[in-house]
Image (cartoon, rainbow over all chains, first blue to last red; front, side):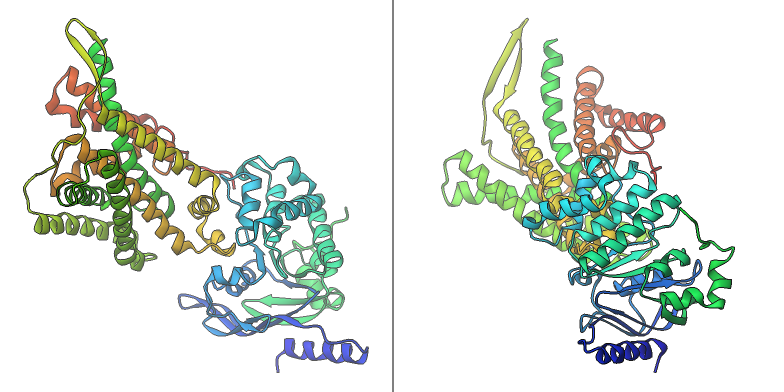
Length: 267
Length: 305
């Protein structure tokens, strides 16, 4: 059995021992391999995200983190293995149908629509939704990121990187997802802005109970925030555990925390 | 002054038709980065559909109201031509998506040849005339025996163009479909991540472009009263030029480019020589592109990311 599988068992046993119903596995990645042509980007990846958790995936540049995020959305599709979301096999579904299953992504590079206003970008996020909810959801994301409220009519392409990141997350939230995938929300942003975004992510999880799968290079912040973490090296999961345990792990410290790009920044 | 105003009217009429066709080029280019060389022939097909429609309505069914006949023909031609547009994308372009860049372009040239030959074989190679349907007009003013004349046909062409372009603009700017269309244009992968069915949006773009070309086809047939299987080529190339001139990918640019090409052509014919009107139109394109490589309303390629 894989490391991830054992982890889930351990958690479920603990939950049972505490007299609670075991939390439900929302996303299960089993033995997934993804290729670009003949080059393997992911090899036999196992990973679980349980409802109500923040799970983080850390790893160096080019380890395959974003490939995993996109593979979950079927672009590219996994060549081997299965991906189940909420009990349903989504491995072979087209991207837009996966997006209709209450799973949203703020992708690598933010990808806001540059020639649309902030408001239109948010409307795109709610494209699948009943328009009744729009005003209410707009209010909600504006409360989370007040900066966006001031800039609703601005073209998204003219905003700063931090603002675009907030917009990308807000846009993902507009579809009312149960599972939110965040791909490197801290990339290229000033420490203060990163703190703001991580605080917002924490709020989403603690207050709204949203399940979050966070991909990060900034290992220190990500592990501090997450309940559990996985480490991806050259397309393979090499380690997993609670955020705290991984933070304390000497191998992780040496590879991702000390002197690296994930060095703690006090703000 | 009198000649000038007359040519202005003629030029705007012709330009309206070019503009309607140009939108199909510019939208398709915007969303999949491909020049749909078959679009001119789609326009020609719509003219034939309109011709057949008019003849059935007036000669067989005895519809005497021109307004009614025009409306029915317009709608029927738009629907059938839109079906053609949809089928062409489905059969000739979609299977080639993701293959090398020239493949759909070559396929488009193939579709163009197919359409003109198909019409030639089924309808014959001769010019097909339409009995004059709407004659008369308004004399705006008269100087030294020269009448500045605005025909009802010209009124109709400009009015229909204006109304449909307004509706079309509303569709693209204000409706969820238009937003999805623009989103696919800017980032197809992201649009899919938000649940937009990209293939369907591309199909609908072809459908819309073909429907607007059909409007142009109906108006063209009414204006000139004659159509032949080879009539897709020159207006098609002119409209493509208009789209490039206005800035390919830009909707207002396509309309503006169409009007400019129409005006250049008529003014050149009136003041210089009618033989060289096409040379004039294409020369202006070359000159504009030297100084504004992305066209008049086109956006520069560099974007803040």
